Length: 136
Length: 420
Image (tube, rainbow over all chains, first blue to last red; front, side, top):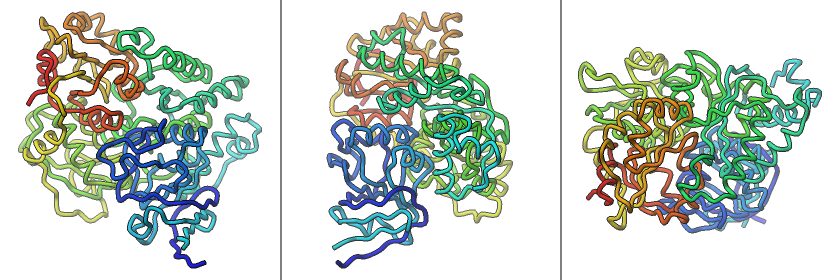
C-alpha cells in the first residue's frame, strides 16, 4: 500500500483510520455547527452543509470561544463527533476539548495540511508517533 | 511534568475521583503543550451553560456532586459565566421548559461542588477584578482577554472541563499566557480614526481578529489620533477585547500607552521584531459593518449582549429608550449580570427600559440560551446588535445579523425595520 506521511509537532490521543474532510478555514463547534444534524451550519464556512460526523476534520486553525471544549464531548457521547482533529495551528480550547472527548488531535506540521490532504483522502492517524499517513 | 506531592496524590486518587479526573485532564493538556509544571491559581471562572454541556457534561457534574465534600469541593474561589436560562423571565422569550429544567439541574450541581453563581461574563468588571500578575483559570474568551490585556493578569482560555479541573485542583499547567515570552507583541496595528462608540471599538477587534488567525499571536494596537482626549473606558476595551477574542481566538493584546504591559510599543514587543503597522480607519470600519446584511427589511429582534452590559451601558440605553415604545413586531433583549440588575432596579433604570417594551434578562447571554430554538419559538431571523462579537456568532444559529450603534439599534427597534 502506497502512502505519504506527515509529521506533527504536537499530538494527543489514540490511533484511528478514516476519511478526511478538509478546508482552508477555521473551526468552532458553537459558531459553525448544527450539532444535532451533524453538519456545518454557518453559511460563510467553506464546509457549509457538509457532514463532519465520523470524519477526520482537517482545518487551518481554531476560532471563536470556549464552548467547543464541552461540546466536543457532548457530540462524542452521541457518536456525532469528528473522528479526529487535524490543525495547522490549534489553540488551548481544542486540545482541552480533545482530551475531554477522547478524540485524537494533532497540529504544527511542516507543511500546510489543508493543501496536502484532500477531502475524501483515506488517512491513518497515529498520535503516539505524531504521524499521519495518506493511504492510497 | 514535574509533579509535587499533592499533585501525585491527586493523580493516585488519594484525594478522590473528581480530583483524579481533573489532574489527568490537565496533565494531558500539559504534555501536549510541553508545560513543565503546574502553577496555583487564585480564581476560576467557568463557562457552563446547558447548551454547551449537553447531557454528557451535566451528567459529569451531577456525578461529581454525589461525592463527599472533601472530594468534590472546589479549592479556590470559583465563579460562573452566564447561564442558559433566566429562571424568572424565560416565559417572556418562549424558552422551552425542558431547557430551563436542564439549567436548574446544572446550577444545582455547580452549587454543590462549590461554584458561586455569579452568572456573568464581565466578572472582571463587577465581581473581583484581577490584578497585574495574578494567575487565573478564566473560561470566557472575553474575560480572559480583558484580564490578560487590560489588567495584566495571566490566563489561558480555560474551556469548561479545563476550568472545572482547575477549580478541583487549584492549579493549571504553566504554558501559554502564563509565560512571559508568550505575552510579547507579534503584530502591530495602527488605528487612524478614533472610534466614536462601543460598536466601533468592537469593529476594531473584529477586523484584527479576522487578520490574526493564531491563538499564539499578540496584536499591539497604536492610536494614531493625537492626545487621546477621550480615553477608552472599561466598556470600550471590553467590546474591543470580546470581539478580538471571538473573531480571532486571541487571549491577549496590547494597547500602546494604555495597557499595563505596553507603556510604549517597543516594550510591548520586547525582543520580537516590530513589523510595519497595518492601518485601520473609517473605510475599514464601514466595510466591516456593511458586511452584515439581511434578506428582508423587517427587524425581528434587537439584542444587547455578548458581552453582558455594565450599569453604565444600561444607563445609556435607558436614556435612549426613555419615553419611547418599541415596535410590537420587534423584540428587544438585554443581558446583564445579576449584580447589575439589582442596581438597575434600585436606580429606576429597569422601569424605564421595560416601559419601552424591552426585556431585561439577568445572568444569561443570548447565544448561550439555545439561540436556534429561541429563533424557532419566536419566529426570529433578522437580528440587530451593537456587539461585533454577537453578530459574529449568531449566523451559525440561523440568524441574519446586522451591526449598528446602540442608538441606531434603538431607533430601528422603535421603527420595526432594519436600517438601510
